[in-house]
Length: 191
Image 1 (cartoon, helix red, strand yellow):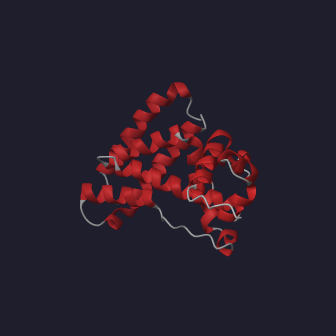
Image 2 (tube, helix red, strand yellow):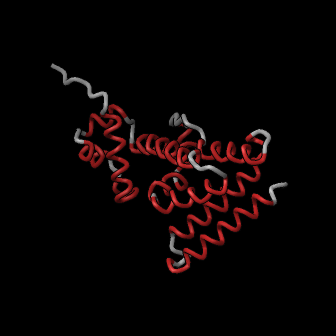
Image 3 (cartoon, rainbow, N blue to C red):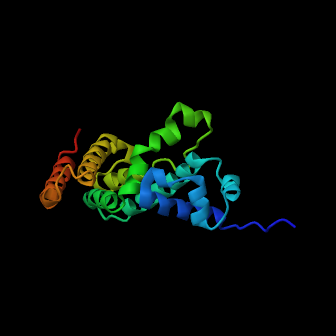
């Protein structure tokens, strides 16, 4: 008699994968380790996810949505930028997955040949575009250059702090500098 299907198993697998990724990054995420952490067996994982990259894609989609929700909850573009950096600093492994692996998982020739699909788009970018349109008027796409500028600034600041290129004793001053740079970009947004 076949075993009944567990409708929550895919979610269990993704939760287990996220815990493993958060704990040990890329090297901790093997199909066998995911199966064990999810309380199942490796064939059950393979029935739901083609390979490790497939798990990473699904994990990245979940993180994208979570990150976008953080930005959408911000009352202003300024606060969204601060929350951006806060998210990256409090979730460094997720942030690494988000930016270090996005291209190879969705846009590289290998992933395209494998049939990889980005089903959620870029919700964080869209959330910030809406914040900018709310502040300055117009349509979200009218603020593309400003959005990219803020993203580059926030990403750079986040990576410098995650990598400790900005020393821990300099973080408070660096955050103040970041906040001032965001304010200056928003004040001079006519580019």
